[in-house]
Length: 348
Image 1 (cartoon, rainbow, N blue to C red):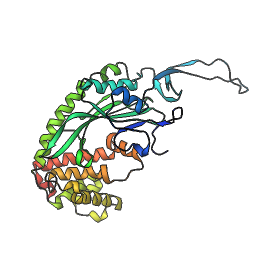
Image 2 (tube, rainbow, N blue to C red):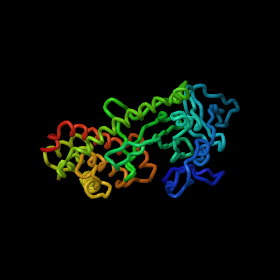
Image 3 (cartoon, rainbow, N blue to C red):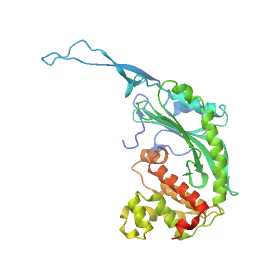
Image 4 (tube, rainbow, N blue to C red):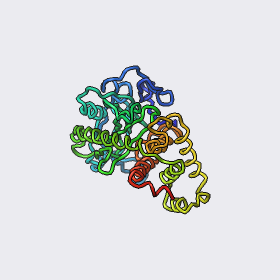
């Protein structure tokens, strides 16, 4: 089951919902209206409680028979779904469970429960990892007609691996292109470890709202400046090659003009990204055609709309969990910032 969306055998439903858009792999629930947090929990099958249970040791007689003197392990516990009894992971004694309801309450607190629009949510595996995307009010406006919606993405797990992560993620409407990038002085995310007071820290939703407001204003300014900065086709290709380069050795070959020595995989990736940047209809708007903003959109759009992934879960991880797509998109953003200051480094 490559999609990894949890199937609850008790209800016969997959733990995923989407508003209006086709649900993941045709699975899950499609709803017509944006739900409340309570409704979203139920639609996505996330309305379950996670408990922390004792783990017991086993001892054996010399003949190999099990002894009836098991003792609880004091340093570790098992996390378990109360509704299905599935064990989700093994955690340390300081691990604090953050219930799925707490994750949605975090989003509700950001805008007082008004204006937040839950768009997708789901659970992976046996329910040990969950994710939520929600749309914030307002837009980032680039030019007159190019609008970017403001999203928040949250993921947390119940298996002891990874932090609670909430990130600001802008998405360009015209091509459903994720434009998440961290600016020099701002992170686009907050991360909270599953330790004591994790729930209380999660409730400090204003931190992420501040991040969102700051990034929205700065990105709008940067993107609008980029729409006024021209870039040649040759410079676009060099920008793509530099953004997608896998290591310093390949970068050196590119800088020395020895592109033919690079791998076919890398050259094909650059070719596909260049083709999308130059030919896709969404790249022909006044804001994107022949501009730095268009070059940046071309690279991020390649990962969002062209690149093939093993499955939708792999795509989600690549785009949102600090995977290759997010890393390369950040490099592209930084290169565009550098080009704005001095275009000469792409002119050699």
